[in-house]
Image (tube, rainbow, N blue to C red; front, side, top):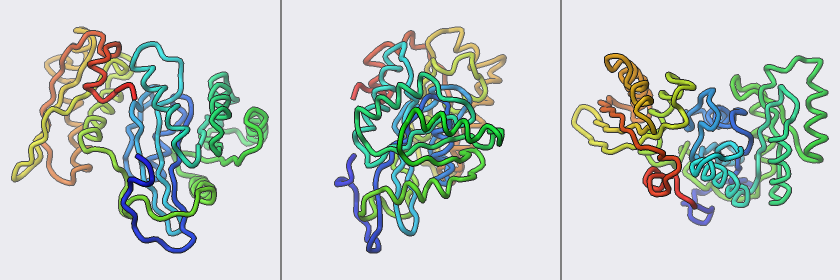
Length: 307
């Protein structure tokens, strides 16, 4: 979706607006930052790498600028069709935006993954801002040294230090991004915080709880499909299926006597009620779909196409 596709809302003279791609290695805090800046839970977060699978839009509207923030999957070396899709999504976003915000873990020196992404960004030539995340973890005497190591790698461009978790330094980051956007009208209504389909956001609420509650046992093999949403008089009834690749993973997700599936459903339902702003009845099922991450047809059904 381009700026020309958006409904324009009147804005004051000198107003700035544009698309900002949040790029970086897996698990550097991109989704946490998106949620922090928007002030709402738009993207799911977890300690597991490659949590983000879709290009999510968060919308931040200020008095002088509107930033459409695109959270992208972490750029990594893919090992299956799903991984290839995730990297393709991140790379394609770079050439479609007004500005790229490269997020790095500013508490540790740059690695090979950071160098690879910077080379990729140089190839595209999109204006770049570097965000040094996790400044709350930096020992003060090492701060200048770490910043210098990233400046030596990236070269001349604006740098901003912040903590996506606490929010420290985020106002300065937003101001820096806003100043570098082109002049233009509101791209979305000022009250909007995301343009994602409801089904995607609901599915992500379930997948987030799977990531939190099962950790390393099954997370990368899980996908969620919302099969039905029914608006009833007193609640919203949602039916969803969690896909896994092996029967052993299904057993882990269901748990003894259904305890794990119940815990996942309860936690997801509480998040859904915040999103929907009303009571939710969630019916959750688990199905085995062998090697779904390597099957083009199944990936397309789940919204992980090849575009």
